[in-house]
Image 1 (cartoon, rainbow, N blue to C red):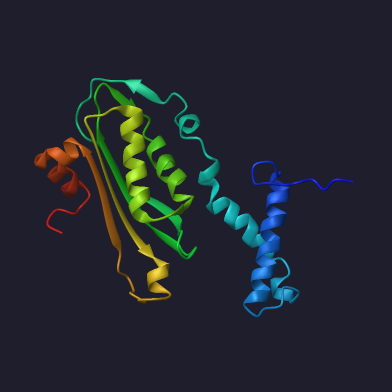
Image 2 (cartoon, rainbow, N blue to C red):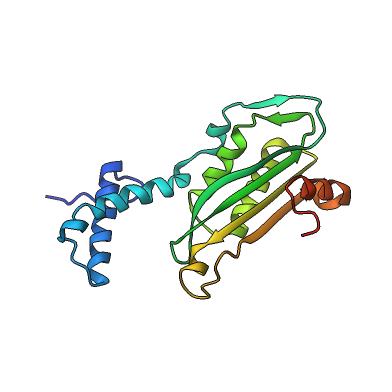
Length: 202
């Protein structure tokens, strides 16, 4: 009888959770714990479910999320959604980093439903990430989908890989930005964006 070969592409959701839970049990043993201890009996399943939720961005389709929420409009001033809370996992240590994203664009005859911008941030946050890449991915996607005059993205985040280990640098947020089009080429647009998110002079 042939053993069914399971890959991440063919396994069911339940099979994926079971496989993740098995890895967590091995991890508990490797760090010197007993996965049969009362407090840890359900930990593998809990961690598996949490990991799948925290990495759900791998299975998200940006086009499906936008779902025709692009509209023709003559508005040509800045559109800004600020203080978008996000949580992500650092790909180097699998420890959380979290903070706020500020996303702006200047339309060129096309706008996007406002609720789609936080959802776009969430899709890229719920992957193993580095903050720099995530910042660029958000800006590039908006630029590709809207063809606006410009896009600006600023992310401010705390990284537990810095605060819990290594440098142990407490309460030191990392700030990254991506400026495209007029946000990069027009100093007045960039200055307005920075002022609106409270970063002028900082």
